[in-house]
Amino acid sequence: MSNKTKLEVRQREIRAKLAELSNIESLTDEQRTEMQTLTKESIDNDAKLNALAVTEQEPQETTTDAESNEIRELRKKSRVSNYVVAASEMRSVDGAEREFNAALGLQPGAFPMELLAPSEDEMRTTTDTDTTSNQRRWIDRLFSASMARRMGVSFESVPVGQASYPVTTAGATGAQRGRDEAATAAAWSVGVTELKPTRNTVHLSFTIEDAARLPGLEQSLQRDMRSALMDSIDTSLFIGDNGANENGADITGFKTASITETTLTQANKVKADKIVEAYAAFIDGKHCEGFNEMNIVASVGSNALWLSTVHNSAVDNQTIAQYMQASGMSWMTRGGIDSATGNGKFGAYVGLARGIQGAAVAAVWSNGTLIRDPYTDANKGAVKVTLNYLWDFGIPRTSNFKRIKYVSKPCRETIY
View 1 (tube, helix red, strand yellow):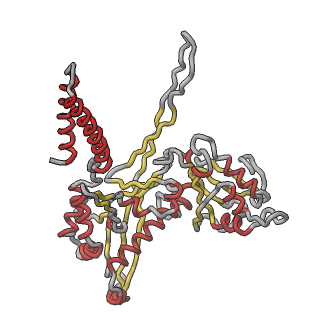
View 2 (view 1 turned 180 degrees about the vertical axis):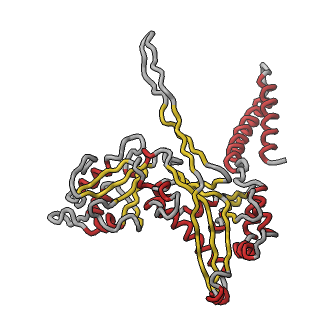
View 3 (view 1 turned 90 degrees about the vertical axis):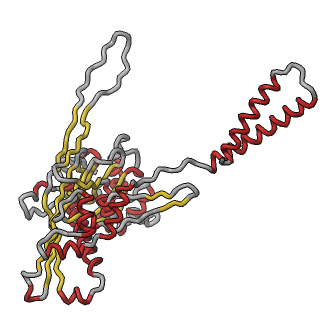
């Protein structure tokens, strides 16, 4: 019997005895002393029970179950190199890799995209009662350091089929009404963004000399493919697809025309107050309540301009960047957007944090195709490895995103 149970049993005994003594009309001195002793003991027991309530917490629920534990163990045993060997021999994988595919619901000949993610960091907190672990989805681990994540893009792992993302576009509005005054009916509507798989390819080549010279070929393959996959998707979201295939026009990323674009003239781009004014206009009290809820990804050109331009040399030589930071703004810089700030160049992309979860979605289908080709350049001792994977990007709610563009002169758009 635990201490807590013993105390609770004793408390019931004390309460019963006190109730019995309280029904006696004329207590003897001995009975009064017993009542005082029992009352004091009851108070002490309550204090002990309160202390136990703090120290003996209920066991926490573990974040994984037996099935997910099994999948995690199979992932540790699976090797990219075994998939490459199976592809070269034109057969399906076997052993741990076959079990891993089956656990993920993939065909034996498919390549699980989860293997390209870094090995998960298992965080454990050991107490007297239980051990817990925290596991994230593979797609989140893979893209956690990308600039798209900074913008608020949600990355999803998608099984076979299309991915649909509904979003409420209109609904009822509350309104105060007087006696017998009717409320106006409001139309409730939902828009659905459907993402269809489009193909992207990671292609690498290594020589048989490299395979013999490098002891960590397995790790090298994972690193190269992971980096190529991450960079390709991240670049497409900010720059758009290069249009090299029939689906190129489908992925315009954050350059899509449906995102509101604010412009800064060449004269105002070097005025710190005008820059802050342009970004402050995005604070609408609904999608964003302040600069702390504004995720800004600036171009290399904008960042260089802000850091190098002094906007008030007559006072304290404060740069534009210092002025912006003093106003509460912060940003990160991504290469490839635009390196200059001339007419028509993009200055920054902005994600407004309130309700941003799911407002933009990059979906990666969970199965890929891995092809090993040792024949094409066999006379050069080269081996080609190709990974074909499927993905798509959509913005179900564009109002959570904005962008800044530099122009040479005022036009019909909002100018600062």
